[in-house]
Image (tube, rainbow over all chains, first blue to last red; front, side, top):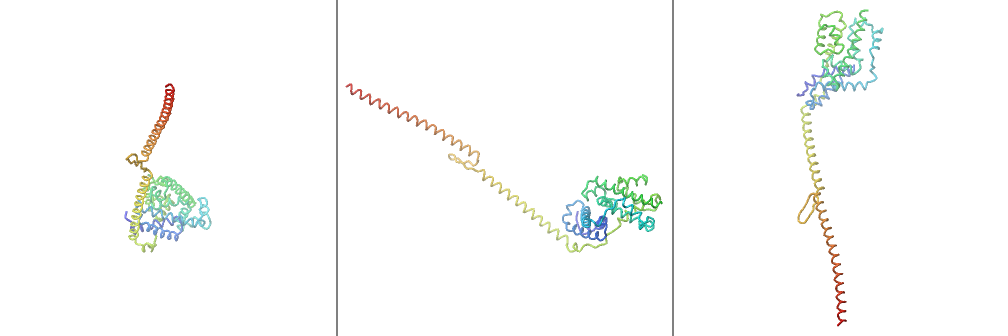
Length: 171
Length: 171
């Protein structure tokens, strides 16, 4: 496959979305995409040797994003779904108000951000970017079965939240 | 398959990409059952996340570093490395080949024949020493015989002398 600047730049949006998903930070994601593009460009000679340049772009972005997260380790604290319920019923973010302001989107976004890192990345690549399980496994260097298990766990957690939100709406 | 079943299948992580795309499409239209409202928000969320793009321009480092120059440089360097490695292998092989031959070579001269093989040379040398030892054995036996002969002659001469003296006395 011939590699040119247009091919590399065609991955830019996907790289940005993944970096934002992992870091949860718009500015960090921008920096990571720039850095990833430069790395990809520097590897352009060798890209011919890779079966899938797009997968390489995603892998580089994922690695740089995780590196960034390691450096910011203590700034992001994982909140499990039980803790998330507290957030949902807290006075300052009432469900009614969220519904009124169309903040359901924000709630889902926040839950995804709080998923364990591996589940979050797998969920993003499959459910948002639309890669199949084998492609995701190749990009992340994982077994396809691991991808399937993590995807299933992530979706179940999301469903749990959706059900809780729905109950709030009904009440 | 009913939408309800498909949703169930999705959250168990068992849907195909085609089925997931069908769900996304189903909820993006206005014609859906109201009981699925919460799921609609979720599938719309997935689609809206994919619509996010990066508006950043191409990193300046990429524009300053044309791919062609970079590629030629690496290709040339790779060829030289390959050539140098091949020459090194050939030189090392030749060196070891000749040094091995030198160690093995023992020139043995027997009569007018030259032998360059160590084992043949050793065998022939042993054979030569055995022959020498054998002839030395013969030589020792001959010397012993000569000694015996001399002693006998001396005895005979003594006997002859005594005999002559006795004969003179009788006359």
